[in-house]
Amino acid sequence: MSGISYYTEEGYKALKDEVHHLKTVERPKISAQIGEAIDKGDLSENAEYDAAKDAQGHLEAKIAKLENLLANARVIDDSNIDNSKVFILSTVRIKNIKNSSEVTYTLVAENEANLAEKKISIDSPIGKGLLGKSVGDIAEVEVPAGVIPFEILEINR
Image: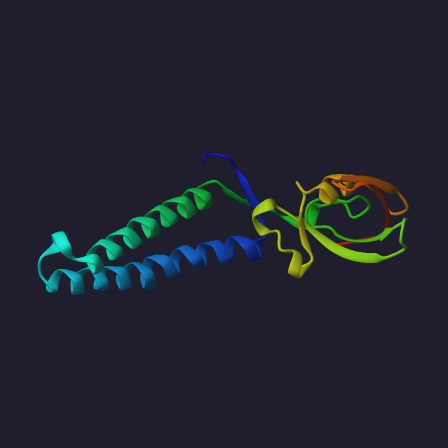
């Protein structure tokens, strides 16, 4: 995993906070579990010890993965982004031309996508279809059910 990942300021801080939590809260908790299991004696037949060591291995792998993400993370500066076209961090109000429904999405990097918060990835079919479009443009988005035309109604930051 050596690819560069792009984050908003908020997403980068959340990633740093998660790594900090894993190191300062979860790691000591697992160490304590291992210590308690060792105190119970014979490690060859100690299921608690095996479970704690397994959990420790998973935790350390997760920490390493997140630290690698942090090392390759770039924070996006949205102050210089052109508002006339859809780019990453754009909040776009679109209208499905087929059924006239409107929805507003914010385009974010893959690792910050969260549909419940109306944040979609720039790598998703809709995200790819909207990139580079201006207000009034029609984005033909290919989805598994076919092609859906979306009209760009508004672009904000």
